[in-house]
Image 1 (cartoon, rainbow, N blue to C red):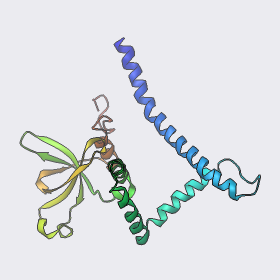
Image 2 (image 1 turned 60 degrees about the vertical axis):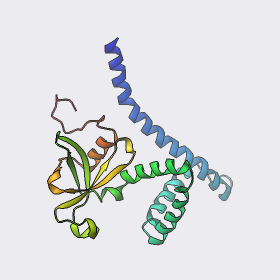
Image 3 (image 1 turned 45 degrees about the vertical axis):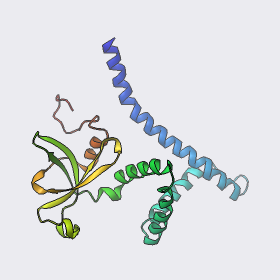
Image 4 (image 1 turned 90 degrees about the vertical axis):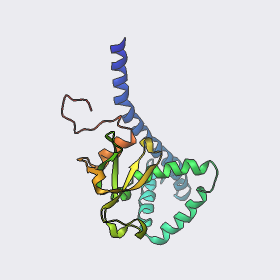
Length: 203
């Protein structure tokens, strides 16, 4: 029974991420087709609409929003509107958690993380994975500026937040991990393991 359960669990862990990813893409496509497709039907003449136009329109809208977010005035207006969510009870907690998660995995945020490092804590040899967000002393506030200090972001597992800490360079050790691998590793509390371990050794 243990062997059967282990085999079943292995199959479930293998299939579930793929299934959830495909379902999310399916849900997004159906939602765009339902919402935007209905709007397009009302605009186009009878018989001109064909299935899939809602999905294409949704992708175009998402792309245009991405372009507009490069403009300062659009980002400012979005921040003002977003501030409303931050002042609403309950919605504030849910929205902030989702915003933190998507900010963490967004391409623009990844550029801010220059190096994956291991941070030593205490004398017991404990280490945590972090990301160097600022290594230039001149870009730090004057009150905490130190030629031997760097700013490191320490994410919490399952994206419940994190800490931004000022550390001496001697307290961190660079790791040979890509940003994507390190983010996936920390977000899942190491459950995913890494793909760089030698064959035959536990990951």
